[in-house]
Length: 229
Ligand SMILES: [Zn+2]
Image (cartoon, rainbow, N blue to C red; front, side, top):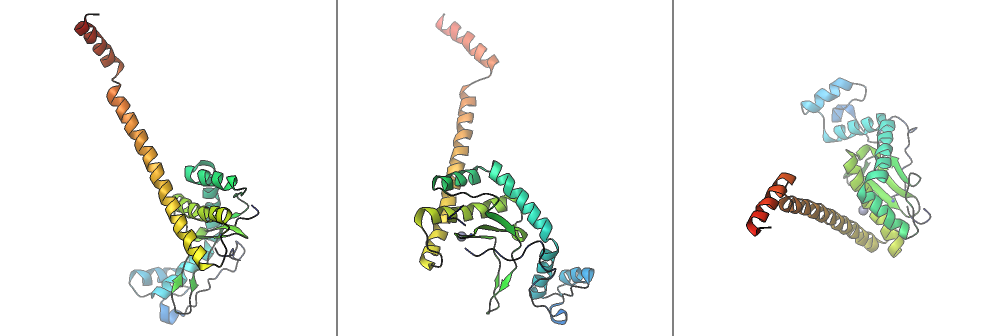
């Protein structure tokens, strides 16, 4: 799609990236030694590994599992494009604005955890950039429905970008589009719940007022008896 793309540029990591994480780690301080597999699990269970050590351990696991995570993410993405009512609906709305989102610009990648200068840990599930597309952080996706939520959130950003010409880097626009994305999804979820509720109630109503064939026959005969027809 020409105009649409995630809020951060796509990470440079890929299935061919180096097999070590970028989290600084001193085994004597953190209790995590990448060369000792089972000892590390033991250290986690016994509280001998610091949070920073656990972070480094998890990042190393993400690196080892990168190819499998990306493959699983791509399979879920294809399934959602085909079967998810939410994703299909949002894709249609984006097409109405002459945009397109598909396997070419919805990309699954491993997203390394970032540590800010103040020590705070930054993880992300995905992102949108008008110049690149949608990024899905394959290592952070816990389930297909988690990916569905993440993808839908980023698709609303894409829709915003096309509809309102959101300026990248403008913090006020970024805040507005985050709120909009949240509200649109909440609205859509409520709409789907109402549809399901209506369908359930109508069915229930019909079943309550549409007795079985036997009872209909019985009711008809008793009606005839009552009315004399
Ligand atoms: Zn967002």
